Length: 538
Image (cartoon, rainbow, N blue to C red; front, side, top):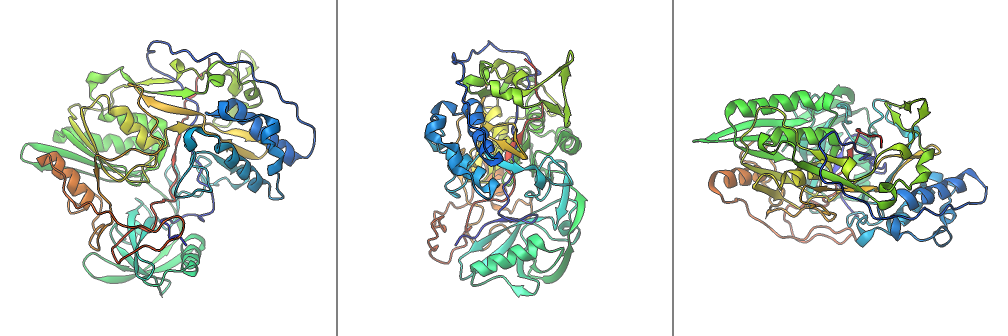
């Protein structure tokens, strides 16, 4: 049995949709990079049959042309997509997609925490679209337009199955939890007057799911850092949230350090006003060093990630390459003829050029056409050192920001645990009522560095929870372990904190040993991905 971290918005079984789509290059072009020659794809004619069989065929035939590792896929006859047809159509398509991803180079699509699921590719039934915002399914507690409809906090379960704690890791701005005074570091000791501190079992997991994912209201007993305990009633409501948990400025002598805890790369409309305000504060204070907290940031819009990188970057690197996107050679050479069946939409509206209906086959997939350059934003112009706080939940757009800045700022450090590892992206392929998201391209920085499929290794490994007194402090509190270590590095050049290696409950279900405080699972139910909403014609 596995205890997971939870985000209070939807059942664990719903797949998180992450969209990292076609890119457009609104920037100067570097030397043109040519794709390798690609033969015309062989047209496979399949027998007419049931809708489910034809959907299974389409899944494979699209993959043969657009999947990042399409050159590793076998023939239609060998793969036999119709073997995956199931009375539960979505389950059958998910099984087929999983089989396709087994052909990824070096098993990059493998997730050791969830070995029976794809790491990057997804299927989305459009009938299940979030009625609040189509950009992200209800899996995530706050969507990428800043809309929330939940209790508004995120917890982790730590300890042993015999004795554990339910700790609040993050509280979303504007949520019922924030308004009720719940803070990061609080411990939940009971849910609906049922104790949740000892004897964790599958029935306890079911109870937590029912109380916190299905209910419209919940009663919690919350233990504060001060030792005071109180009963809090939360009602599920709609709310608007911005993506900044906390921004602060620390002054030590002549040293001025800015801190930004960033939850998600929401749309620029939602994120830009608060990012501008935070970085204006940093600029006015004369900040030269930054601590960027990406521990719970699974990604979001690439345009927002690029905006954050442009806020951080000094003007001296204007027009330098930030990152490039690499599609497979079939797409780069314009040979993915199957994309003529996918209508190109902007804001759900078909696009035309000179009276011609545009399709995804009309878009530019060349490296040169998908190269992005720095364009300085804001007035903070003296950043010399950056420390990123990271975890296994740091993914996609967060990793893109880190990787893009590395060649241009000499002193960048990562503190925490190995990141998720998602340097790939995609755009939706519509098959019947489903949207399929194959891994379609990978991103690399200006020096050609990328391929962090297994995650980025921190310069200093530090577990967020390794002792009973860890994680009792809110974002921005210098008593918080990872933040204290980053602050120490920037002030003294040395890290603080104790690195503890310990046994954590494994995905195979083995019991964890001892009585140390441990996270039962590093898996996070937050959405992980990058949404690319900028697309360019050939």
